[in-house]
Length: 169
Image 1 (tube, rainbow, N blue to C red):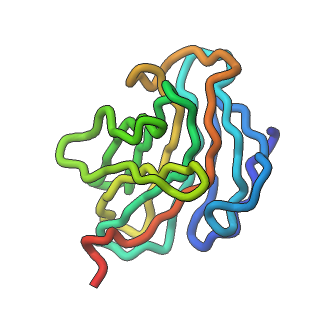
Image 2 (image 1 turned 45 degrees about the horizontal axis):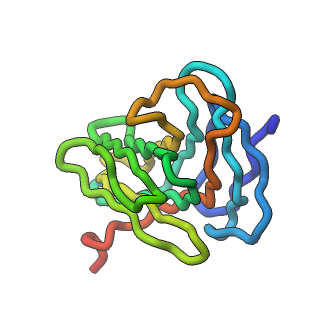
């Protein structure tokens, strides 16, 4: 795919893709305003990820950053979030097994079953400013850098950023 699809979700912008081939997948949106994408790790050595930015956030608030994914058993997905200042978190998920395989110390993260075979992988992270950068990628055995085979992939339903349930009043 030469360019990323436009995102119509307020405050969310896709900002880059590396090491992945992306094509629109069939089916309606999982996250309103975002296309469902089939992502496949191309046969190159390195990282394989899709990056997004969420802006217009409240400073010093904890947000839940959720990626909606469908993955076959054995596919590991990394979710990495940073505010560009002091806050950073990373976790690696096994969506098919609905478990977190590793994460940054003290990070609140999880996997939840969604409708129609979708899995919600998420991280809670505070922001010191009004934006977060979210990197969602395919990893191999808890390693961010590997050689893609042109087949390993997942279906990506979109990114949501909302106040963490623990921050809602």
